[in-house]
Amino acid sequence: MNCSGCGGEMEEIVVDDVTIDRCERCGGVWLDAGEADDLARRGPVSPADEMRRKKYELLRQWKTADDPRPTERVCPRCDEHLARVNYKQVPGLLVDKCPKDCGLYLDKGELEKIRLIDR
Ligand SMILES: [Zn+2]
Ligand SMILES: [Zn+2]
Image 1 (spheres, rainbow, N blue to C red):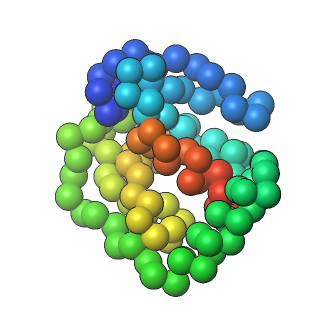
Image 2 (cartoon, rainbow, N blue to C red):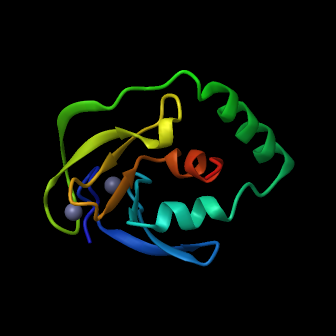
Image 3 (cartoon, rainbow, N blue to C red):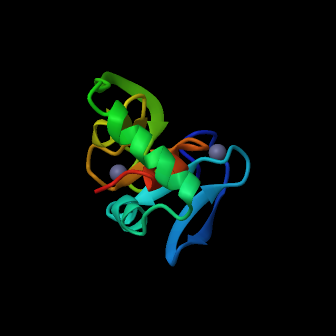
């Protein structure tokens, strides 16, 4: 499978019993539909994470709008162009989502943010 971000080869890694695809070259991550929720459900793992999660909860009142412009990135499953969407109203967290709901593409570091979000 090829990375939506840089076209590099993605490899499967296991995070908390969930198998996801990660690009060695750019650190991007592909989550199939449902995997983001699987990971979020496992929740924060340390007190520092818990503090950050509370911070995100407070910031949530300032919503970030979806970005309607189509991206250059394509879905590794169906080749549709990904769209930028605001992940669960978390401020500043725009992720690339397949319009056919195959899954989400996350830039390096975004997976950590998703894992802090309460469902
Ligand atoms: Zn990449
Ligand atoms: Zn797709």
